Image (cartoon, rainbow, N blue to C red):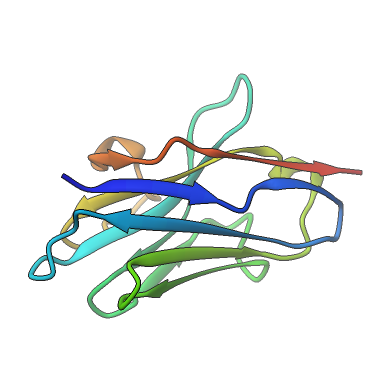
Length: 128
């Protein structure tokens, strides 16, 4: 059973930066995972923001964050980070870390329904 705990959310002004961290426990060292960050704003669907395959480090970003967000992993510490720069008010949402066994399927975007393991979420608020 994989457990995920997010940290690093908060409030920032537009143009600022935040770094989210996702600490994973219970993962098998013999298994590769797709780790992803999703976000959900009130009244909107959960959106896949970025993903990374723990085996090769292959990354994916949704178009609205490309060039501003960076997902990375520290395999030794079982941590996946999301560095968010040049934040915009439309980035305001609850951000969730998620994991699934195997590689990342990104055709058509990262789908929340593919992921088995979820963190509790961390709030990111960007003011204009």
